[in-house]
Amino acid sequence: MRTAEIKRETKETKITMSLQLDGTGKSNVSTGIGFFDHMLEGFAKHGFFDLDLKADGDLHVDPHHTVEDVGIVLGKAIKEAVGDKKGIGRFGYFILPMDDALALCSLDLGGRTYFDFDCEFGSERVGMFETQLASEFFYAVCANAEMNLHIKMLSGRNDHHKIEAMFKAFAKALDQAVKYDERITDVLSTKGTL
Image (tube, rainbow, N blue to C red; front, top):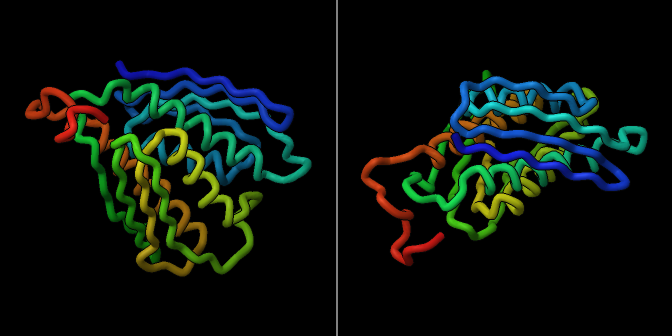
């Protein structure tokens, strides 16, 4: 089983996370931000990842530090759990519909960080979750997992649906990228290393 346990504590947040890539989609998530919890539960369910997460952050300031730091911890957990990357597909992509929203996510676990986020929102927040924090979260995941990550909203009107579609598309793309392929006996790279 490919697992990781990460703890991170700063003056702004205290986070503990365990992630199992070869799971069944079980989650136990508590960040104090209801909509964000819902998104992370969807990520676990649709990626078939087992996720335990407890985050205590300075929500009296705003949700920014909590969301960003959870992204940092998730990125580190993905990197650790994937390990040496031998035998995995490396690339993943998914186009996911969520009612009016259609989200594209494509990623590469090749060890080089690049992030592109193409989505506009019509509202400032969904619940306590500021819509601009979606890009902050995914950037933090991308940078700490050392992945190439592209997220593009192809269409959509409802911001709840847009954000939920991108979290689920990310989960499906990541699940595809970390899956073993019996044809791959080392790492999927002409360089011989990732």
